[in-house]
Image 1 (spheres, rainbow, N blue to C red):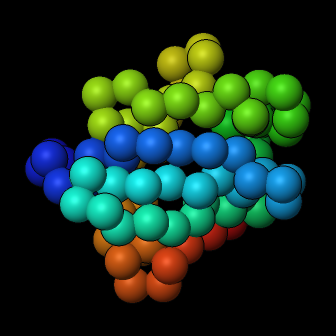
Image 2 (image 1 turned 120 degrees about the horizontal axis):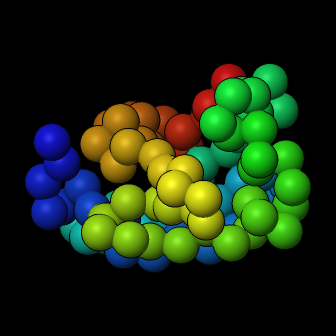
Length: 88
């Protein structure tokens, strides 16, 4: 379960395809980058750039239309260590 400081408070698509910038409640900033090989199963819908760029924050979580979301605690830990979270 995530704690308040791990909550995502801002998400923005970057000019680089399949990349988002995020900011957490404690001020930590970083990037989320999807490798095309990760876009299968439920995430296959995110191959559509228009849908991918519709990412928004809901209840501290990066979310897309269609009930897709990412776990903020895993994202936070990886960004804190590496500055970005690469989903392969």
